[in-house]
Image 1 (cartoon, rainbow, N blue to C red):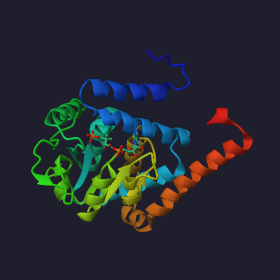
Image 2 (cartoon, rainbow, N blue to C red):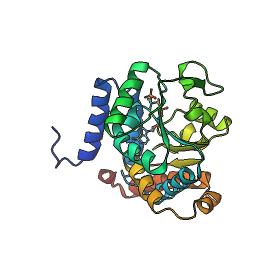
Image 3 (cartoon, rainbow, N blue to C red):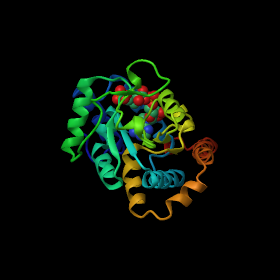
Length: 250
Ligand code: PTJ
């Protein structure tokens, strides 16, 4: 039991979710490594949602609103960290949920679908595996025809860079959530929310509910500039701490 008074309570609880998810066979073992990388970047961000993440969440909501066939891709980490919120976002935005795994296994897909159904999710795709993401080899290319394959806009949080690129080449609008602004996924997506998924999904939902003039938001969106803002923030923060020797503040 982690005491609520622990200064890193939230972070430790989130870490436990990932560890339990692994023990239940939902999170892939490499999901633990991916989580650690995410934690490191969240540390640099001060574990807060910044303006650049707010702006990207708004752009993401705008794309979900104008999409003809929006799909939200769910992997092991996403399911345990934000399953409940993803189900709500899918319902509110009319998006289809597809369990789409990098390390594909039917057993894990079934477990993730069950988890999402327990949170109220319906008609979750993933098991069909009747289409392929073009340009990728092996099982990581498999997807659902009715889901990712025929989508126009796809939200792929915590995604692998190769698959993000392949989805772009298929002509999809790719929205992502990635704490690492330097990752290939972050740099290739149309909208990158540099924030923790635990904060980002509720944030997209808030923006979606109050959304006005989505087409204008999309027209003005500049993902590269926004990513640069995220990087600049991290650099400024590190420089500030370095200059003042306030290492305990980091
Ligand atoms: O369940 P599977 O088989 O589909 O596998 C899922 C993982 C995450 C293991 C797989 O997609 C993978 O290996 O991803 P990568 O290439 O490690 O990329 C994950 C990205 O997500 C990294 O850039 C991390 O910094 C970032 N990340 C990790 N945790 C979070 C995060 N971003 C936002 N919120 C997080 N909590």
